[in-house]
Length: 425
Image 1 (cartoon, helix red, strand yellow):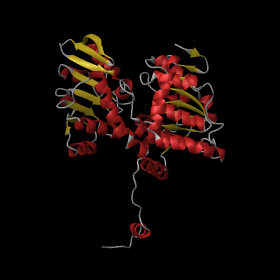
Image 2 (cartoon, helix red, strand yellow):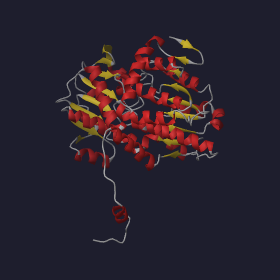
Image 3 (cartoon, helix red, strand yellow):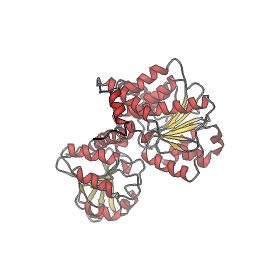
Image 4 (spheres, one colour):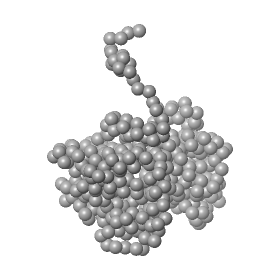
């Protein structure tokens, strides 16, 4: 493993050329972020700011990192999952002088070592996907807190945990919930997760979806996206839920809804997308058909209880990349994909660039907002904040324009009518 202490640690720097080509491809598909890069290239509003990031090292992330650098920021980066780093992209960033600590297949100890390395340059802004960086600062490096202006969070699970911290009074600096932007979770989470999850399953298995019973645990934005894409490929989709209103939505969308106890016996492919631990456990594995395929697309690897599966196994072997065959003591075979980690990034390339364009534009503008407040000697309270509707609309407007799409505008009379409470029938 190539290493230059204090600058980078990646798997193989010779992969940089291939990584640069992938980054260039992503740049050609991310016009909103590229427009922001061009807008702030000369003024460099992030000059003097140090951003520590902990987010999947993909070609799309590289476009974001390079945009931060073009806007004047110093950046130090690590991956937010042991299996999601694209080694050629990490090499390309390292070759360009970015301080990066990430490689595919790291263990848990190495994962946290990488986060620790990103903190060596004492950041004043943080960027998270899953909040592991923020938790590390709060739990192990509170001496860094006074220097931190604020942070941003990319994913649902991280936002939930940070809101819990804020409600308990434990959050030491403000965080902007990028995940909760309409131009993030209604696009990235639905269309990005839906497509990339099926992409990961297909790369790991090459199975036919048509006619299969696909069980999707959770019908939030991510689960809905997976369900829609599986349905589009001809699968019979079954949804499991704990929320009665969400289960009702899934039913009226045309999906079958049942408990996991019921679904375990009839499913061919299982996808967890809940953000909650122990969605598939020992009793479910025991009920599954011979040949059932199990995977997770949630951020953490606790939704599929792999420990329970290990207890039931007779043998295990890797039959394809990111595909392990567990032969159970009952004679049935269960195929676990990506070791129960997020299959869309571990077995595929993550979300398409086109949807990450909007998510990462939100990240850039939110970091810029925190920096601008700091320049004005202002600071948000130690809470979790939503982005503004104005920012959502600005990003959506730019995205539409890059797609060559025009929309109508309200006339002055229409705007007046909408706000006129005295108007009757």
